[in-house]
Amino acid sequence: MENLEYGFFNSKMVNGQADRKYNADQMANMFEGLIGDGIYESVDDAMQVRQKEGMVVQVMPGRALLDSRWLRIRSPLDITLKPSHVTLNRYTAIIMRVDYDKRVCEIITVDSQDATKPVIPGITRNTRIKDYMLAYVYVGAGVSSISQSVITDTRLDNDRCGVVTGLIKQVDTSKLFLQYQTAFEEDRKENQEEFDKWFEKIKDAITTAIPLKEYKKRYIAEENEQKNIPIGITQYVSDTDILGVYINGLRIDEGTDYTVTDDAQITLNLGVDKGTPISFVVLKTLEGTLKALSKENGRQGGR
Image 1 (cartoon, one colour):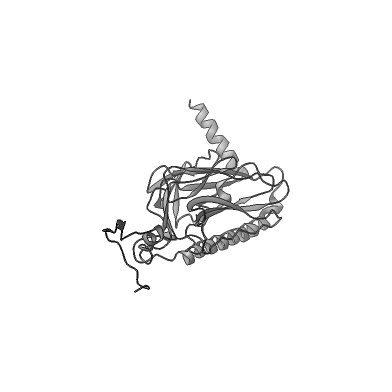
Image 2 (cartoon, one colour):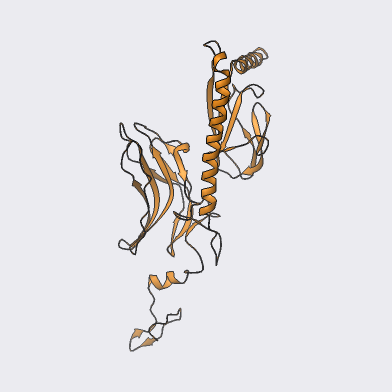
């Protein structure tokens, strides 16, 4: 039965030759239909791409199953992106690749063409190469460093990567990823429209004597299920200033997702995992500035 395959059995020596030999493809076929491709979300940091310094990003430790081949990163892997173009922008994709000609699983970068409006690189999937995209990075013209805000995580996108959640069936996260992205874009558009309406009402009252100033701060969760998050912006006055809170680049709502417990921290309704980035943006008014100065003077006077 030439069209029948099976395995595995110990060999017996027949005429000086082992009668049961198996190759890598036959070993890999054992996983086909049992475990789908993607990253293991429960192993280490699940290969998240994070900023490090300058033009260097890191792929965090984790494990993946790629076309029934496995790949593991045991410690953070540094990847240096090529320098930015002076006047044009680009995207750089961080990709896990199975290369059958080279017989390796590796982490590579794929750059788009430099352009005013660059296009996100695609992935290659044919009989010799299988790509799985972890993230893509927007590299603006002339930048010399990468921030977390320009790194778009694609691990949950089943069309690009996907997550292995268990045997037999893999959860299709592509629709969930699309919902997250759509919700983010809709929320950003809605917030911009609300801000534009608010600003239109007050812009005539704003003079050089009533400036608006923006402060930003980024915090990385230090433990799993962490709920209490320090804001870290000493100038923030909760009853006068506008606070925006973002987790993994997605804005969360006060009341629904968190409460401001005092001027120093927020309390999340649901805890976040260790290593999760939380960003704060404070839009300060003149009244808030005066109160912040008064508070600071009070602290100094009490020393």
